[in-house]
Length: 148
Ligand SMILES: CC(C)(COP(=O)(O)OP(=O)(O)OC[C@H]1O[C@@H](n2cnc3c(N)ncnc32)[C@H](O)[C@@H]1OP(=O)(O)O)[C@@H](O)C(=O)NCCC(=O)NCCS
Image (tube, rainbow, N blue to C red):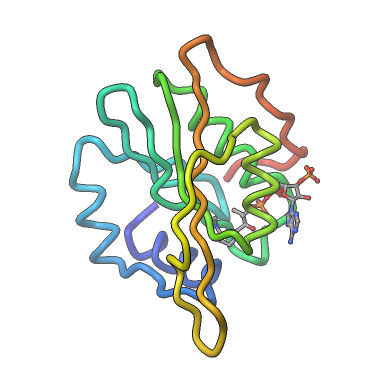
């Protein structure tokens, strides 16, 4: 996927938040530590430093949501070689929180009022992590959809 395509999906997925530009994706992808995992309609951008994997962002185009793409991207990410994985999610993001906790992520910290919202109260950021030193989680089953 090109940086332009990543930016397009990100903007469609994150309509309430500031979306990331193609230039920002290009700069992130220039790091050897950063990897994009993608399939038609969605992608996960991840970073691996000394066995610690971070999910920088996960986005599925609304046209393709609820078809198992997000879950499959996460499963592919967690199948990599890592000791621990972590990510950050807004406390009001029910879809993403559901997905992460189903896979086995647990809340390890909270940043109070981290996400500023226009015309609404700020929302906490939850830091979720999963320990993979004893192997991968029982990877959840993806719904049946062709990869693109
Ligand atoms: C979060 C996101 C990546 C999920 O991707 P997706 O491809 O739609 O997810 P899946 O189809 O794999 O569904 C995974 C689970 O989430 C559930 N889910 C999907 N939308 C939901 C919603 N609005 N509320 C609650 N659960 C929801 C699904 O039911 C499924 O759970 P189940 O298998 O137990 O039924 C996608 O909604 C998205 O891009 N959202 C906007 C960007 C975002 O919030 N990214 C994450 C930031 S941390």
